[in-house]
Amino acid sequence: MTQTFLDLPFVRAQFPHTCFNDGWAFFENAGGSYVPNAVIDRMTAYMRASQVQPLAPYPKSQLAAERMADGHARMAEMIGATADEVVIGPSTSMNVYVLAQALRPLWKAGDEVIVAVLNHEANSSPWRRLADFGIVVKEWPVDAETGALRTDLLEDLLTERTRLVAFPHVSNITGDINDVPAITRQVHAAGAMVCVDAVAYAPHRAVDVKAWDVDFYLYSFYKIMGPHIGMLYGKRERLLEARGQGHLFFAEDDIQHKLNPAGPNHETIAALAGIADYVEALCAHHFDQPANTLHARTAQVFGLIAAHEQRLAERFLDGALNTPSLRLLGRHTAHDRAPTFAFTIKGKSSAEVVQALTAQQIACWNGDFYAPRLLEAVGVSDTADGVVRTSMAHYNTVEEVERLTNALERIV
Image (cartoon, rainbow, N blue to C red; front, side, top):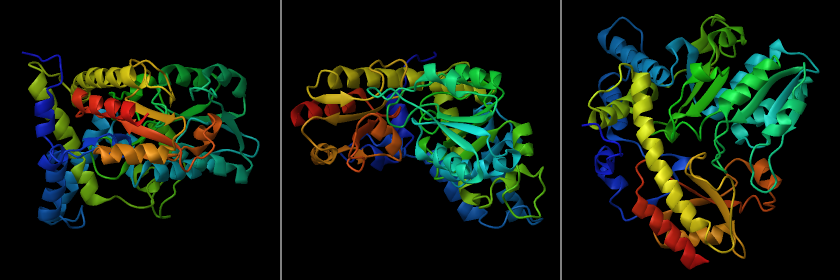
């Protein structure tokens, strides 16, 4: 029988015993998620049996190449892409930097890029650096109270000189989900491209890059239960057009090498297959009739994940919005946001709040989380102290969220 609720005991059993049996409630998921056994097993298997240079003619090398290709292909399929549209590089920060440098030769002085203040710095600094080459950088503002992206201002920012708009699918501070398909249509109508940072979105919802028609879409696997490595999706024609940033002997149609000057990280790419293994295990457990493709099965699983995380968000909001002196950034409803919450408490530094929560074995952190421009825009002047951020993942329980909200009430 198909289950309509996420089976939390089954989910948590897929992770190492130490993740959930140490007495702590873990709410630093936006900084990096726990990793299931399937990923650890894939990494270990690669290093035990095939830790050699791939693509040589001997058996161990062929096995290494097969395992890497499997991880690469399955990550592409999960988001609705093909392997030749996906570059797996060191991190989202590095992938955006390489992309910006790869596109720069296609533009000329006076051309424009629009950069959302809402961005994590990964999708901000690389584009802003293009000002050194004569590119005009325009800022896309946020609401000064909530931090929400001012979508009503985009039309006035777009011109015939606009080449690209860089914005997040979800803010890693506010948790707000932006309407990527609608923004993309608006940008395309003006003749420009989009670069979407999905680091804070991909852990919480299924991804469909083709349906959304995005030009570039990036996220980090360590936020979705994988190793520390990042993914760049691009429309194939865009990736072919971009200029190579790797060794000079890599051809311009060799997308994997020309846009990954660091070179592939063998064992971590092979380990990515474990993310797909984990999704497959959840799908088989919860659905009597799994869908026919990995992409569709991923959507089935993330439907359950989204519903569960909405319940967690609702419980947190019930407590937080009734906590005196607590200022919560982002939307105050659960259905249009990820379960990532940033807040300040009047009269207390964010570091004090985190220290008090840590004393109660509640794991979270404070700071600017690589989004100081956003914090300044919403009036958080001490960006080093920043905001308190508590973030949930699908393996968190309602009881853990209640621990958090009860602790916040005691702190205030």
